Length: 41
Image 1: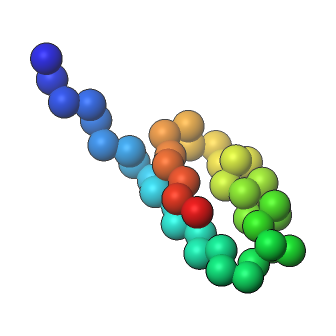
Image 2: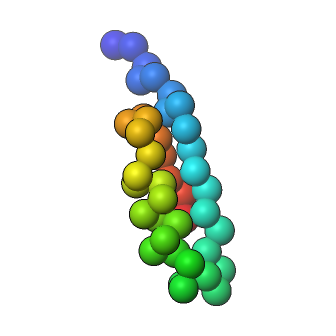
Image 3: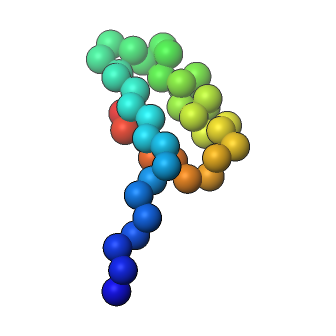
């Protein structure tokens, strides 16, 4: 059994008191063309 390939892109979005910006930031990440990404909020 081999180990899975690491994710090619990891996006970290700090969200302390950022409610008004969060939806736009998440939409931007979801719109990326590279299918291999991870998101940490």
